[in-house]
Image (cartoon, rainbow, N blue to C red; front, top):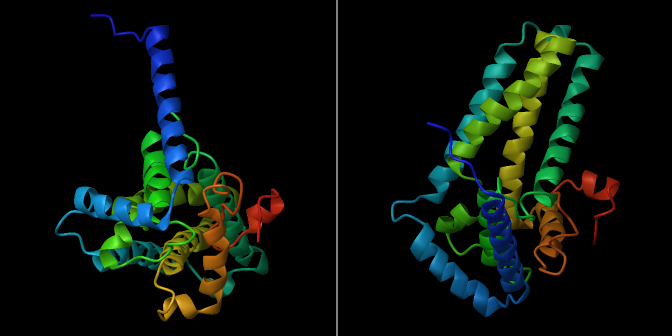
Length: 251
């Protein structure tokens, strides 16, 4: 039996539906007020957060997966003392690479609806940016971690399907130990990203929010949660290297 084909009219209808959905999502976010944010939160908690969800377990799972991957990589290095200064350069290179990936994903599919990335767009622009606004940035309880952190399975995808292939490429060029150091560094960036993003959305009077770097990142990321700026500014969450390089840094 021949494989079914999608007619050009069907493809056109699908694209039009996606664009219509994008317009609706963007229009609703532009009209955000603190009252609408709180109303959306109530709906989100009722419809999207399971009764048995535990935010600290969510964060703990991500942390353990990343720490486990990092430790496994570091203990597999033949000799840390034998690493040269050139080998240690892979740590900033890994962070710059991760910063660029973060920027590209956030500026691209997380804020622009596409047929293959609709779920990512929905989770970020249609949900996260309606759960948090510049005026209402803080979570109310640990159950709100679900609207802040990536799903737990994403940490497995990152350490297994994103970080590992990148490390294999580094290993093919520079060797075994350099690749393991690169892998540990890029996984640490992902873990730092999750913790920093959560810290940004913690209550302002909390201990985490009072830390100097978190306070600065909160102000930086808060500008991105302004609906008028979310598609043009501050796509790096805490370390705005690529925002500075590509002219999207606003203060």
